[in-house]
Length: 491
Picture 1 (cartoon, rainbow, N blue to C red):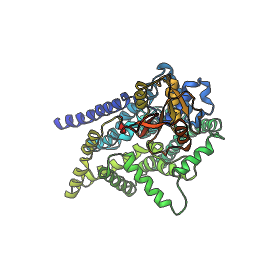
Picture 2 (spheres, rainbow, N blue to C red; picture 1 turned 90 degrees about the horizontal axis):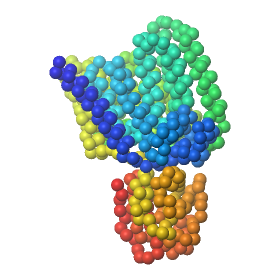
Picture 3 (cartoon, rainbow, N blue to C red; picture 1 turned 135 degrees about the vertical axis):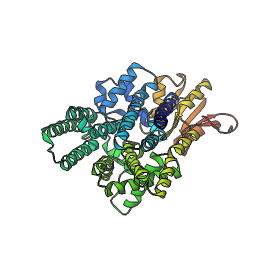
Picture 4 (cartoon, rainbow, N blue to C red; picture 1 turned 45 degrees about the vertical axis):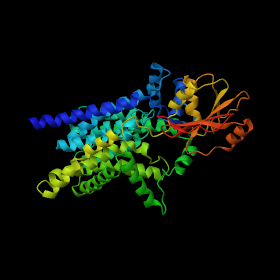
């Protein structure tokens, strides 16, 4: 009894830790970055009907996600928190569902603890739990489908639930077509293995899905004005699978990204997770667990194929939704090591070693505590320069920083007395003649653009102060006078 209570205590402790970590990330009030600013500018400047048209600034997102975000912004206007409430809700809904899935698939409490630890202590997932985009929604969507499928026989009205969920998710998540294909293959396999017909409910469900997806495709995707630009962008980023001599190198790089960036725990833990996953794939084949292979590996294969066709990039935030399947594969191999080989001494030793992983993952989180940032955070820098404002100050935005600055200007975060000079591919304004001091906002990795150099030279402005925010955004003050003050790091 004491052992049972201890195990349940560990599970509840993991849930509490997950809520605390996500809460810290949410309450940190991290500023928006470029991609978030693209969506939020459309959300605050368009009405509900306007969100059904192609977005400004090359923005792309599922229409139902936009409508939900618009609703939260309407409830809590002029606040970054409004953008992050729905992603946080999705994360908190994901956790108990995934725990139920693990408890249905695996007998060992240690397997469930390991599986939960891989998501609870996952810095990437914690970060996206407060990202004002749809990636954590994708994670919840695939988890709900997994939950329905593994309880198919126990659920009344299974196909009705599946039908409604699919219709909603087509408009909510970009990865829904991948999931629906996986669902169909899974149900087809189960019908064959159990020697039972799929029936008319299966056909009706797929017909409705097909009609809704066709409608969504022709209204929101077909001939979208940003299509060619996005293909070019992701091609340059290497997110499309090549079909040439670089194929194997690309595959190796992507899987390295999965186990060392998606599961961001460091080299040692990443190698252990990769080993568990590799063994899990072998064991799934060895024991003919085709049902789990379909759920966990088919989405990966379909996503890779779509990236090869340049239809959907294979990049970290876009394959975040694959996390549940990857974790299930890892836990499958772990349970084999701890139960299937429990009669062997080395099996017990290996199982004990891998049982240390949750403690090691918790240690990583203690060392690298939230809030986490994967992108530029200009908000803290803006708050700093607001305090240093002098009459005649202007703010110059470099490449990629213009839209976040415009968002905070429209939101009223930037002191209204600042003249803002936008210089990027989407926004372009001139420098007022009355400017006496110039705050230049650029990425620290960027070279100073020629146009800026000429402007500084013509106004006889030299650098007098400089600091960086988390995420590597540099604020530099140029004015007439003497030289550079030592650069500071703003946290």
